[in-house]
Length: 213
Image 1 (cartoon, rainbow, N blue to C red):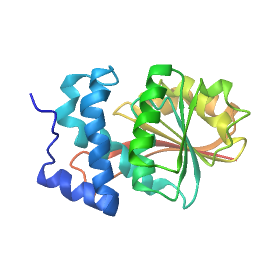
Image 2 (cartoon, one colour):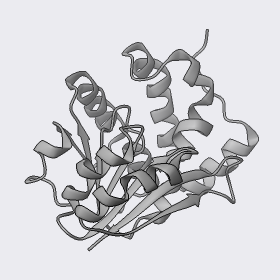
Image 3 (cartoon, helix red, strand yellow):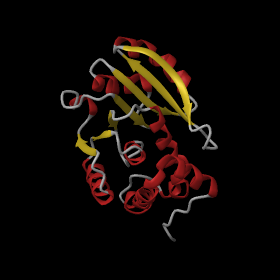
């Protein structure tokens, strides 16, 4: 079985829009995911054919919600989703990838080095342990936990001012409702569910955006 991940015409068009002249780097990242990423258990073999649509592009379009030159902390980076896709799409961003598991951190370091991503720092630890070391403008997360607990992992990294962007599924509105009190207690001023990538993806990405301060 070949691990070459082919882009469909639609994916190719979206990828060019999102990554521009860094598309080749994004393709190399996808190869890492399909080979060593799968071998080391960062994602299952069933995900390989859907890497572009379901994972990489789904995450990368979130870059459109982030201010120029921002410092972004990605919580529970795992296979670099969304952290590495954002670093690839937006070289102007300063990305800090936060990941507690050593084997995942080792893989992230390898990929960052191979792709020559100078705008990325990998930090091993749990988000709540790194609050004193990270002061971000934006905090991102995908498939980490429900919003009730995710709010407590992301909002403190903003130190009173910034934005949380949590990639969520169809239950986003329900999660927002359940987490409303926790978010307010942590300093969240406005929480909304937005979609991105409507113009280039067949299935747009749903994001919970929390403005803090």
